[in-house]
Length: 288
Image 1 (cartoon, rainbow, N blue to C red):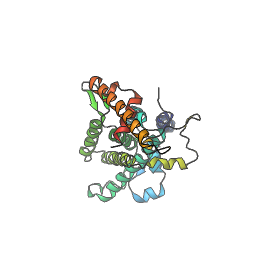
Image 2: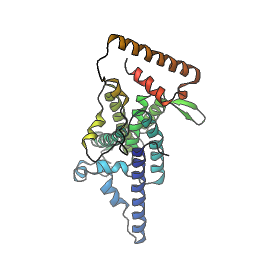
Image 3: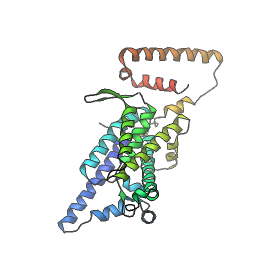
Image 4: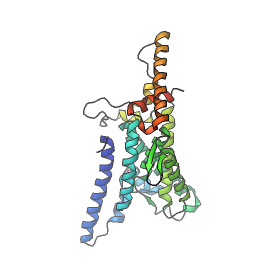
């Protein structure tokens, strides 16, 4: 089952949009009406600036739009796998923010590249981009830089650090820029840039996702419960001043916990840690 209501919502929205569009296309076909190109024209993000000005909503709609079954399948699998890891350490508001801003960054890089580079001068007028790939790549890159030593068991390879998986996928996108799907790979790189930038800001005490708290209709608490806070926020929060004696005692106790966790890692590996132990370890690592 999904660990997060927001992760489930993102996947459901993508699947529902794909199903609705496929049903519309099938019924239109019964009347010998070809409607696919019209739907893409209204929902996919164009590289041509004039078309973008008249269709500004496509900056949002394109990141929920898929044409083929295999396209949406692989995007949703990646979103599910890395979204679950993302939510082990960060919260739902940050997941939604990374998805939307990563998609927007992907669209910007795609549009800018097609209008600036001579390589695309014959294609940019009719070129369109669609899919959640840039958004998903932003999530993959964000969590990979947040917990770079997190390991995933891959078939035939065994445990692999999540950062290596992210960097490998980015390298493939760079090498594929000259392929038939140049726009898609450029959008992936834009999403990756946002994922990295977001975690960089977060580690420096600036959580960009808090702008979503200003939108009344976004409720991230879930059934009245208090929303999960970012680990970095806890690092910079002090409820009251501590005496030197209290501070030294707390420091000694925390160090004892860290030593115990590190000893457990050396004996059984990182995967053997509980969620609470992981949180303690990462709070401690970000104090240095």
